[in-house]
Image (cartoon, rainbow over all chains, first blue to last red; front, side):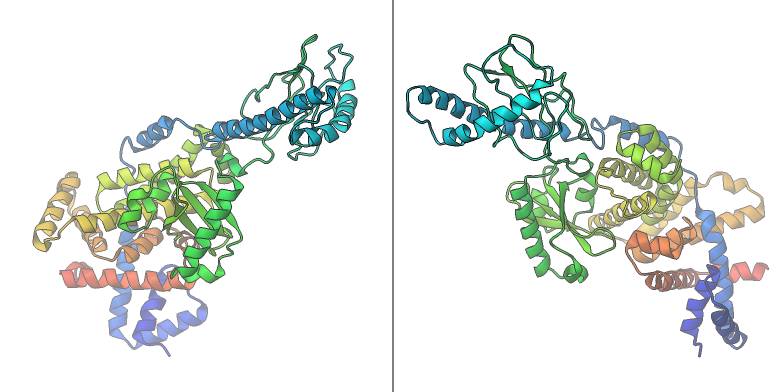
Length: 323
Length: 197
């Protein structure tokens, strides 16, 4: 049976053309006997007609103002943080190489006089012959020939290959691969440009010039971050994930039990996050553009949460309402 | 070009593609903000911020909803936040603020004083409805504006606000009736109009 409250709901649905035939019958039956609701129907119809007329044109200059602000943004959505990220990775890989080379050099030095070198040396010693042989094979078809009779040190990066012919699995293989070098000068060539998609480094960038005992290699990040966003390292991500999962468990969110806290995605906070953030006064003071927006759960659907964490303490400062 | 294609290009920094997205969405976003916060200046500012946040956040947008749904959500949240802050900031004096509002609106529609009588009545009716809207809760105003001004479907509104369709339906029904009640209590809105017919 249809009472007035139900009738008002049905009237609303009718305005949007969402009534089923049964509901329409129900409504008409009620209206036939209810003057109040007949008046309500008329009034609701008037409002339904007038409301769309409130729509205004966009004020003059607004479109341009929007585009001016977009243009004033110095960074472009994707490539924003690639550079620092690549440099960091490259710098740490370079440091690893430097240690190995030093170790290898030491080994040579000591091997000559019958002593063994430091901790890096045994590993270097074991890896060296195989790596050198492998490197020789791959390099033989390449452009690098220096005319040296001794084995040439060839540092091969995880992804690219100096000869551009042989592709290697994209793992961090910098450590196990090693070479011995006698007076080898290490020349490191950074990637020519920060590219959003991984591409094999061309031999040209990392080629050797004749006569020089230079080792060059191209380095690519081992994995590309999704959409080119800056992300913290694995350990930090895990700490963030754990902090957020714990915070969520203690919270009063409806969806907290449905959020899969094994799924985590971390990105720098955006202006939108900062504007929409909910946190208490103390935390709000700590919240700034250097902090992390941590998304827990599956973003397809509604079973996820976005929490904001301090870049230094990694503690949860607040959250971003999803709806 | 589809919205998806434009978004893909915009993600790679194509400002022209993003401008197309702005053009497609600016009127509805502006009107959403205009009716949610009640004045054109703040609405313009919030509209700019919505698009700017969308531009900055494109890297994070993964297509889990349509771009315009996401944009509506950004704008809507920003407006609600703005209203909360405004509420905290202002100490409301009912009689004074009502008078101020009416004066403001008269300034906004100067030409209509000289319009033929029928149109004048119509524009006054619109003004009355606009004022009535502002007396609703932000929640009611939100769904009513999205349905009646932006023309979003129940499903789309549900996607923007993270609500089930059934919830959207009943909220819209309650919003419409709340508006009707406000206009009835305020005075002669309906009785005048119906007596003219």
